[in-house]
Length: 203
Image (cartoon, rainbow, N blue to C red; front, side, top):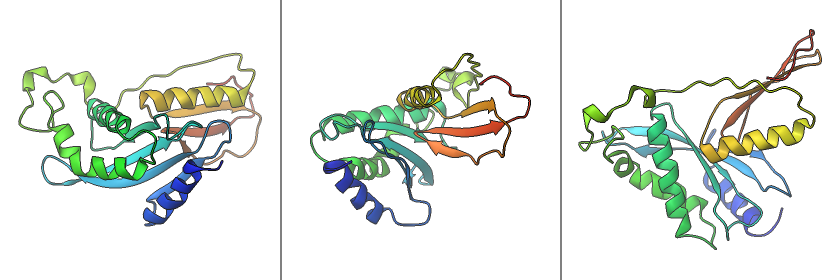
């Protein structure tokens, strides 16, 4: 990896140098880097809301949009999607130049306005009758897949889906016996290797 993306990574590492603020999750010559920035932004009630922003810089970046994933225990799924979509809209106005730091600053300054949109439950524009219980809190879905032939390609595909859809979750594999690995966060997806002696199929 070289060029603008590498230079931007070095600049971001220097800017977000506080404990836990910055972490490179993966580096790939073919896919580009994936990294996480932890920050805070002022919400509608003037309280700071912690945000975990995961960015994927594809090979064509900055001439093409970065992948963005937004996570926060203080936001509903609908609010996280709104923040991500608004960030991507802002990114379109910054094409052809390094933009990650500008996007982080922008969301810090504008989160309260994003959450104040009608239907998101973050401001006076909320209509109580429009609140849908299914949008509050996390959703849970279990997907069971068989006959996985190429583990690396499978993981890459699922991680890309999770990044594109702004999802978080766990990817578990049952297989050869051995010590289990620690959780790793990759592109908005937590990945856990679960090893069992009975050699069950992949989940």
